[in-house]
Image 1 (cartoon, protein in one colour):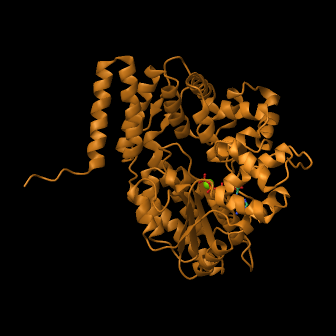
Image 2 (image 1 turned 60 degrees about the vertical axis):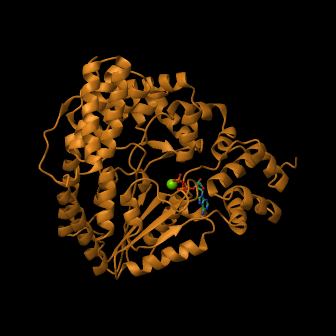
Image 3 (image 1 turned 30 degrees about the horizontal axis):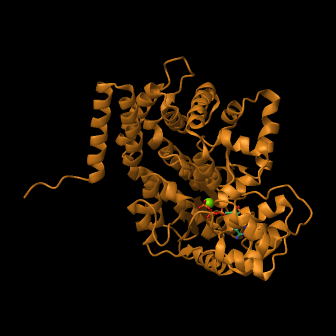
Length: 496
Ligand SMILES: Nc1ncnc2c1ncn2[C@@H]1O[C@H](COP(=O)(O)OP(=O)(O)OP(=O)(O)O)[C@@H](O)[C@H]1O
Ligand SMILES: [Mg+2]
């Protein structure tokens, strides 16, 4: 094989920084047109496509485009991401409000009316989720894991929608008054639970001038995965930017700009027909670079032939310590809190921050804007989880549950802690704790009308009770499951 000089470092699998973004001219033009219409009428746009096609990267490009809109002060961009942990009620929306709060300052944005709207929306969003969160989590005492739960406050969904809508109207008023726009970016809405999807749908239908709402959604072919609300959003008449694989000129640009590799036409043609999604291209170029191979069509064919899929290929290029790190952390649900990461990796004191920095440098993790870490790309985590042996999965989940229990008093997101514990106990086969916590949380999500999450949790309680051979618990869990399923099926029509 032809070789070039050995270069070991991996280019990160995180969404592309806007300054390295390649190709997608047509899609960028469509988004630029959406931006230009926003001052007059509120706009929504959905960026869709299969895993790894470049949706989050295009969202980052859009963020920069809005921020750098010509004229006066920079336009505010609020961004949040939905993660794969069902039940994080309005957590992305809370993040958006928090982001806006941080950006308000005298002389920038945030008059009296808006500050009041931010405070009110933040309060209402938090209160709505409160019934499923405990007032105070108790540190591990041996038995007690659940803590004291709040009484249901009086906040209904309509108040949430109204408060968030009012906040956007205030923001829109300020923006249009100053000849600017604000962008709200939501990544991965296909992972959102039903309450969040409902709020997204209602928000999309009522966007004031000055507000651009852009969100990404994984789609399988032409279909939107999952629930009807997403399809409704899709049918609401706003533009959808569907990303296809990259063309050969875009592939050459990506090789040049992100890897300093001069890809010839034959090699680009091969990639265009075999693995044209950007994630696969990143894996292929990283593999060439790490193995010191020239970007010829022959080398690419060899690299791809033995790979077994792009995520597997990405892993072959990692160092031993990088792979071990990925394996040890893959059972966690993002965002990974630093104290939990430190506990999982058995790090103490001054060892923690350097190790966490190394995680980011490995190219397979990324630091999140709020707090915590995630895999640089979800496909890497999905692959890593699939590869775990049964024994490793049980042991790592047990360690994760233990780490959450030990560190919970230092963790910011109570709901994230509870849902993570419910998940880790179950996968660690600690069925006693899993049954209690999943059943309890399932009921709370039922009362909050998040039936999808309620069902996931209750099904775990049922399976746990079966393993325990506890008939009373099993009967209670099944009753709860039936109750939820009746709600999902909707009201029973009276017989004629
Ligand atoms: N236009 C682009 N220019 C340069 N790099 C890109 C581009 N699009 C995507 N990439 C790179 O390809 C990889 C996948 O992109 P990205 O994460 O944006 O995909 P995605 O569609 O959001 O994936 P998922 O469905 O899993 O969320 C990332 O490593 C990213 O840096
Ligand atoms: Mg993405």
